[in-house]
Image (cartoon, rainbow, N blue to C red; front, top):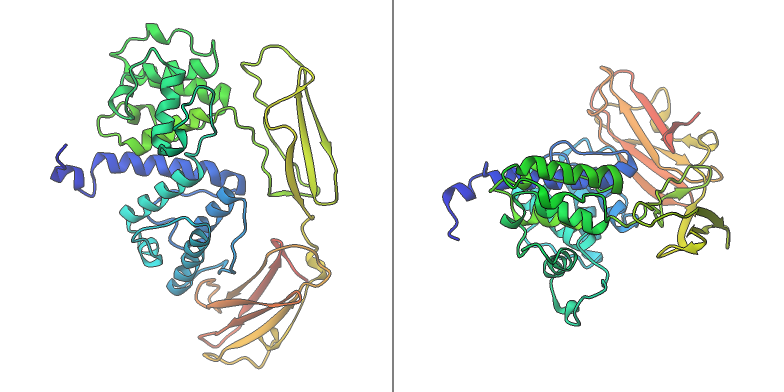
Length: 393
């Protein structure tokens, strides 16, 4: 179809739907680290939530240090560069996306970045029973459409746009994945698409733990784009997944996961933990005495967070006298013997502001961190140092 001026406009309806969908997808992943975004165009600009999202998606830590309190534009650019460099090392190729585009809120390129992450980390399907031998040569979109056609062969699903607009296809797909959950979808009135989509998505959310990354009103909107619909149907495809994370677990901290036995019939659920060594564990889940798919789940358990009371500091930057306005000063933070934890430093100026003094943190090795800052005005300053989120003595 020809691209109209309306479709290309900054406020084109499909762009708003895609922005909403991508925002919900990001927030679903950031929940486990107690973070969220409200404005996709602006909230990735300091790099912190983008870095957090990549760490959640990849189950890896950043290769380079970054600024935990990016108060200045240059610090934000450096943080985003750390994230983009991480993607490059993960062999995730980006086109025309640089740090400046993210920091300056270029929505078009930010949407492209998020779609690339969705393609790489979410829309990757295991081989399913009945899939043809040419599956490996197909795109994720083609494979997902094939999976849907396999699950609901009686529905004419040939795309990710108009074939979903009366809401019945969603009901059919949900009932196919969990037989009996949505049994009356065939009797739904096609002239009530919002009611149909709402019921199907609420059932999937309440009973199957499928997050709603797109609103029912958006699904039946003629302006909805394929990328938003692909993301939504992919969520239904992974409804059998279990929330057992291979990383991010910590000694003495609760590790929560869900066993979804909705469509498995009657049976006793049994869960137990093996301790092969000091750092790796195996979570075994049995249903009716038999292991469920992928069990046992191997997980990594990190050490307990460190003890802030064992951290010490030394240097001219924390002395009560001797520091001069507009002249750099520093102090060292010693964490040897304190365990594991993030080191942060924050400076309040004489007016009590937190973002007027630039702070640079450098890992010197051997559990020593150097904090350098340049006060810009005379008067009393307050230096706060935390370890693992707790103030040191």
